[in-house]
Length: 122
Image (cartoon, rainbow, N blue to C red; front, top):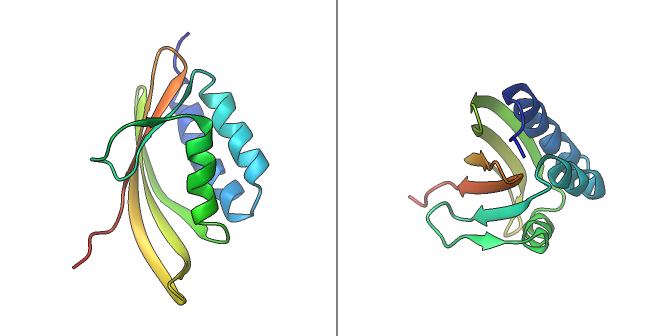
């Protein structure tokens, strides 16, 4: 199985943020499963252990229900991509706006590895 074309990856990465922001979590999950039929793996944070399974993605989503994600920039090189994301929501009762970087690797087996780089505490 070949990995998705770069234009397909870029389109997916922009659209998934819109779906999440609009609260369309069923569409969001369906989009992930369509572009990565071989399965989902994640490192969150990016240096953490690799965890695998669609239930992991669903659990991550539940933590950020109501947040608005704006993809500020997308870079794709063959089967790898990074996005720079503005994340706006409420954390500990406070409105916040933070930026993150997400790195995606699409495998020839149809899988996806997502690595999330969060803001550092100062």
